[in-house]
Image (cartoon, rainbow, N blue to C red; front, side):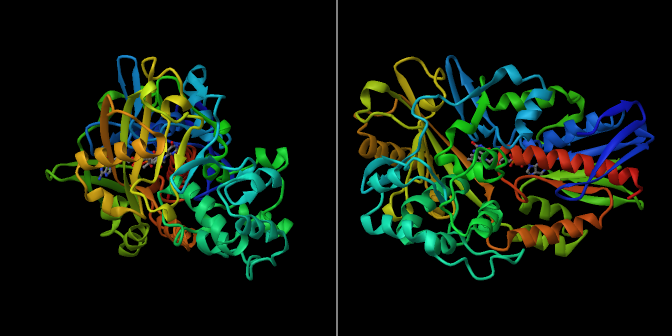
Length: 507
Ligand SMILES: Cc1cc2nc3c(=O)[nH]c(=O)nc-3n(C[C@H](O)[C@H](O)[C@H](O)COP(=O)(O)OP(=O)(O)OC[C@H]3O[C@@H](n4cnc5c(N)ncnc54)[C@H](O)[C@@H]3O)c2cc1C
C-alpha cells in the first residue's frame, strides 16, 4: 500500500484496473486537487478514505443518494438486540477488509463466527441435513461424509465419485474459457449434485440463476485446479487453502470458520471510515444525476434539483453498474451500454425474533439453504444468533429469511405483510416453530446483487478499456471483480490509487 511521505509528496503504487503495474514517486500540487466520490457504500467510502491517505491535502467529497451511509452494510442496534439488515460478516482470507479494519483501529473489535455449529444445512424433501464435510462448493474432498449424506441418492453419489475419470472439458486451456456454473457442475459432478448441493450453495451467495452464472468469474480458482489436476477431487493443501481467492466467498456454506465480523456490527466499518473524512465533505440525500466535463481536464457533478458541484480533478463512481451507466452514458454511450448489461438481482430479508423454546428443531448450524428443486418460496435462512452469539436477549433467537433473487423475482412484488407471512410459515414447517415471532422486520435490497453471467470477465475488460481512455474518471463497486466486502474494499483502494496515479501522470 502507498505511503505518504509528507505534504505535497506522494509515493504511488500504480495499478492497472486489477493489479499493480509499477511503482512511481512523484510530487503533486496536492492542495489544488479536489476529488468527488459518488456513492457512500463500502466501496465509495474506502475509495474516499484511501484518497485522503494518498493525498492528505486534497479535498475529498462524498455524495450519497440516500439519507445514510453504508449501502448494503446496515447494522441496527436497539437495546441488547443487534440486527444486520444486509451483509453480516466477511472473509478474513481475502485480506483487504481485515487490513482496512486494522488500519482504522478496529482490530480489537474483529470477532470470528461461533465455534459451535459451524456448518450449513440443506433442505431435502422438507428435512434439513448438513452439507457433507469436506464438500467445498464444487470440490468434493472427502469420500466418507459424501457416502453417508442423505442429501444425495446412491446414484448421485456414484456419479460424483466418477468425476475423477471424466475427461477435461474441451477448451479449458483457453484463457477465455467460460461456461455456466450449471453446465460445468452438471458435466463434472452430475445433475443431482448440481441441484442438491452446488446450486443452493451458490444461490445463497449471489441470489443467482446458476444456469447463467459464469464459472470463470465466480469460481476463478476452479479452472486452474482442473487444468492442473484433471479432477475436482483434489484435496486442498494448507498452502492452497491460504492462497484461495474468490473461492472462499463461494465456499461459505462449508467454510464458516473463515468469516469474521465486528463486535458491534459491520456498520462499525462504515462509522470508522466516515469518521476519517470531514463531515462537511459528506453529502447525504444528494443523488448525482450526471457528470460533465468542465474545460479539458476537470469534472462537474449535476444533481436533480439542477444544482451543480465542481470543478473536480477526478471523480470515482462507486455505484451499482446500472446507476453508473446513467451518469456516464452521455460521455461514452458504449461504456453506458456495457455497464447496463451487468444485471442486478433484488432480494428481501425477513428478520424474525423468536423465543428459543418455541422452536422444536435444534439450531445446529449457521442456517439452511433451499435448493430450487425443492420449489419453496424462500431461498435460505440464517440463524444469526447462533452464528454470532450475544446479539439477542437470552432465551431468544434471531433468524433472517432470504427471499427473491434472480430465480424468484416475483417475491419482490409481494407486500411486506405477505413476505413476513411466508417467512414465518416456512420456518413453522421446516424448524417446527410453534408460535408467531416476537418481532419481525422486512428489509428490501433492490438491484443490489450483481449477476456475473457467462462472459462477465470479458465485459469487465471492455469496461476497463473504455474507462482507461477517460482521464480523471474511475469506477469501483461490486459489479466488476468480486461481490464480497473484501473485494469492494479492494476496488475502492484500487480506484483511489489509480486516479491519483493518473492525475500525477497528467492523464
Ligand atoms: C442482501 C445482501 C447481503 C450480503 N451479505 C454479504 C456478506 O455477508 N458478506 C459479504 O462479504 N458480502 C455480502 N454481500 C455483498 C456486499 O455486501 C456488497 O457487494 C457490498 O456491500 C456493495 O458495496 P458497494 O459500496 O459497492 O455498493 P452499495 O452498498 O450498493 O453502495 C452504493 C451506494 O451508492 C448510493 N447511490 C446509488 N446511486 C447514487 C447516485 N446516483 N448518487 C449518489 N449515491 C448513489 C446508494 O444509495 C448506496 O449507498 C451482500 C449483498 C447483499 C445484497
